[in-house]
Amino acid sequence: MKRFYIEPLPKCNVNKLHGKLIVLEGSDGSGRTTQIAKIKNWLEGKGYAVVNCELARSQLVGPELELARRGNVLGPTTLSLFYATDFMDQFENVIIPALRAGFIVLADRYFYTLMARDLVRGADPKWVQNIYGVTLIPDLVFYLNVSPRRLIERRWQKADTMDYWESGMDMGLSRDWAISFLIYQQRLRKVFLKLQDKYGFIVVNGNKSIDSITHDIVTRIEKLLT
Image (tube, rainbow, N blue to C red; front, side, top):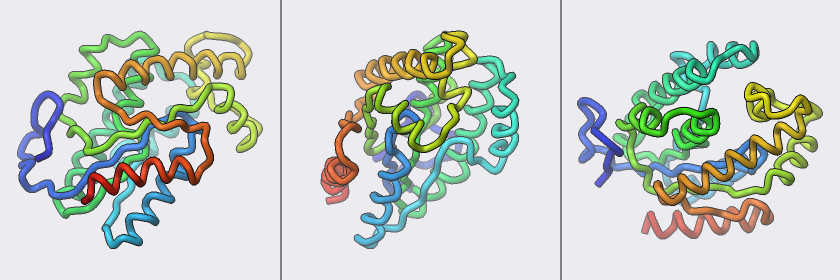
């Protein structure tokens, strides 16, 4: 039976949530998007109905959040609450209805990414935990663990520019974007590995080949579904 972290979402009967919630976590360049696509194809090939969701895509504030990010002027608390609003809107209006309908929900990041970003920026852990206290405990959470240097290599292969926020430029770590990226991603990685102890992520070696990673993930999902 599904369980919530701190308290149930109002008017949500967990006995009616028959689907599965599977989460893939990892930094930009860790291969999440590629793995989500491959896993979705595999699940649909097995006859399962699948719904995807990802951060900053809510109908309520998704477009506004994207515009605000481009301005590079958001403070840590404003950024945190903006993302929390986006996440909770999707949680209530996408994830819960899909689980109620018996779908498998593949989440390209869950609130763990938002928590890690907040903690790296000095947020109070209790405050962050309380924000997401009405969220469901997923059936599986995979964390693609990729070294920061590999991440920056993949970033440069993908585009010739760095993302302001994913580089931690708002934190004043370095004037050099590449150095700031490495420092920021190293800090995020440490936080994620600490969160793994608390939330029980399945850590996957994201430095391996795409097919090897898919095999590792699919093997665990098969066990869940049998």
